[in-house]
Length: 290
Image (tube, rainbow, N blue to C red; front, side, top):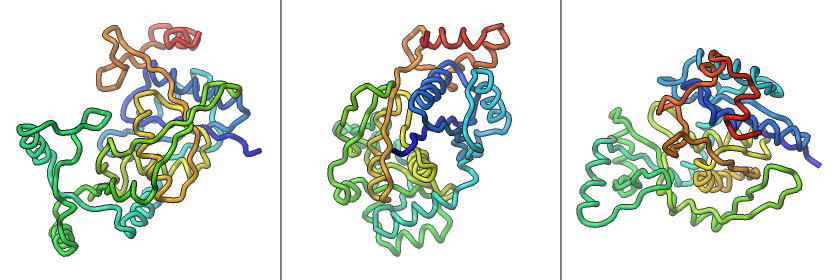
């Protein structure tokens, strides 16, 4: 029987907070209960926001919580060629196209469409891509790229689904004895997601799928806020011929207003709680683990 492999994959664009502690501890303890390996990965593909001091802070916080990992830390920024190769594989099959609209132009197109009718949004609340880049000829696309225009590389979701057919997601409980649940994937609700840009040959969706496969990850443990994105990941796994791991999406830690904790809302960092005298046991209690 293959040994289970788990991973904790934070982005070093800020310090860890209670929500990260819940995720890391849930992940680590599931791995230990199942006799599995536990890996640490830094999702640092955004060089404008990810910084070495944040990575060092993450490592320090995890050690403080009593979390240890197997093997070296994997940094996505060191493996861009692997993501580029996956993107080129999809492009060679006619499943990727460049779009050239700026964020402002996309916002204008969405406003124009919403003035006439409801325009769909993805599970994160972002409007689906409203442009017509798929209608450009190969010559038009090549000319605009050669001219140096910025662009995003998008997955043609309709074409992708036509290739993969219906897909399922296996959701597992936190304990080995709990029953599995098989869910239908619904990638169509995401529209033509971005898989890369002119300056970066990947996106969160593509990099996480490639990394999980290359690292042999069998169990992905993360918050419920990422559950819907699993449908995109299943499509990419199917298109690239990659193994689909099992998933466990845990509850979120929320603030007094019921909003999930996040770096963008200045959630109290673990390092600040530690400076206030909190112990790892206090963190478990505050995260609702005891």
